[in-house]
Image 1 (cartoon, rainbow, N blue to C red):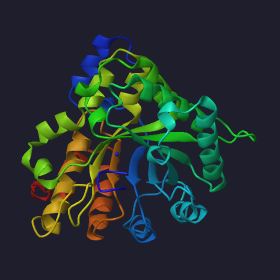
Image 2: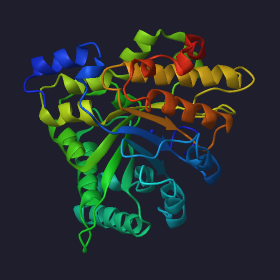
Image 3: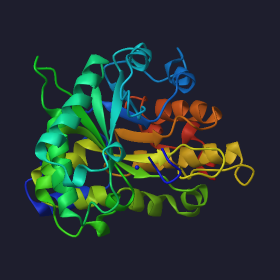
Image 4: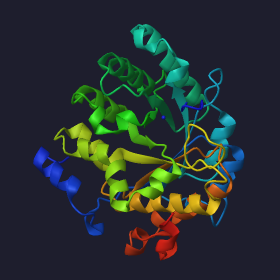
Length: 340
């Protein structure tokens, strides 16, 4: 990343009701608990693999680690093996970085297919579980040509190779298209393609510490899940599927010198304060309709290693308690942990 970010309900009426209804534990359709991370290192990964205190490895959990490698080597078999050593719940998603293909908006279909298929083949050979699409540009809600080209790339990335091997996507969005006010049309064909090719749609919210801590939990949830409500109330099957099964909010896990990742910076923000920021984000996500089973954080590298111990506790608390009422509370059932 550069310093600026390298980011079926049957009717619309029924969808609107579901989007605004209070979250009820008993009404949830069972789904895997999914955590997703962007940018990782071997050192950071070890915190999430650590026996006894790391992330749960069982049929009810999936942990996806997306990573942007150098353009010349876009996937890593060694990183894939390190991630997957945690067990079947641990998945690897090398990133197809749109910024590495600057001419894509005017490229021919043949060129788009060559780029996508070359990446796909390298990712499959590295034993990747998914491809990550990094990332939907800021003007995508209003730029039809851009969306058309991205739709083609998604299709080519998702196509099976000559032996039938195929990857589905983890689709990352920058902040502007993660807000419904920036969509100037329904973009139905675009969202249908995203739904058909991707398993997770990640809305990036690289907010600063003051923003997260300055909003009430209700206002923060409303902001973070605004696009999810827009999708859910559309009445369009693909959008509703995304809203109910794939939409995922990403929170900044960056703690260090000021950067485009935002997050928190010492000495203005202590590590204790920032860990409570992360706790607030997790609680709000868990308690907002559409966030019951899915959460994302980025980056895991670079950031202070003390962030990892908090994130793994949050995921174990909010996403590993058998759907009981306690997991809706703040970490360790102590509201002070969420007050930053």
